[in-house]
Length: 144
Image 1: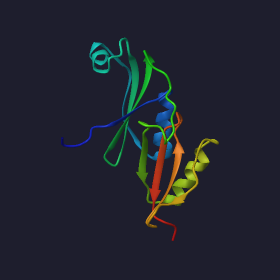
Image 2: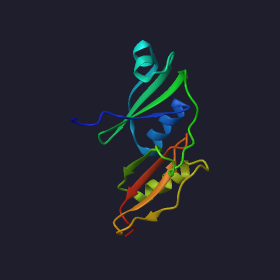
Image 3: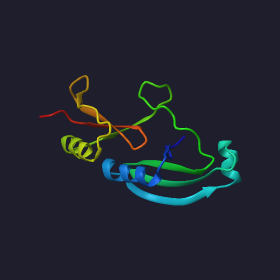
Image 4: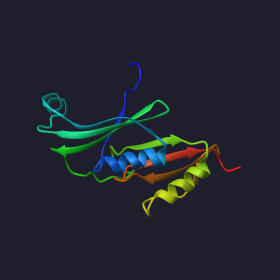
């Protein structure tokens, strides 16, 4: 292998999720396609009749692919950090306190964890849930 290509998340509302990752996380939209599907995708995913919309967002070498199914979508998974197979994304931030304040202001009453000092005293962390409940972590330098 040479490098990673992308991380993909299936979302319930593409525009809402893209806005979260753009406005809260700070990613940039790289591409968008509002109608994808066909035999190739049916065979690749073993999901007959699938149609979907997709947005690719980038930040610091990471490409995040958001997918909203228009046809042949599935059930919403029970998301929690403790569940096997559950994913979360983590971003380093330079302005930790500023990022925490921006996230709290934009959370709309959604889940934002308290700030914690990570073991070893070298950094702090907090989590926020994206619009579908996927956890996003921010890590930054300790308070001075």
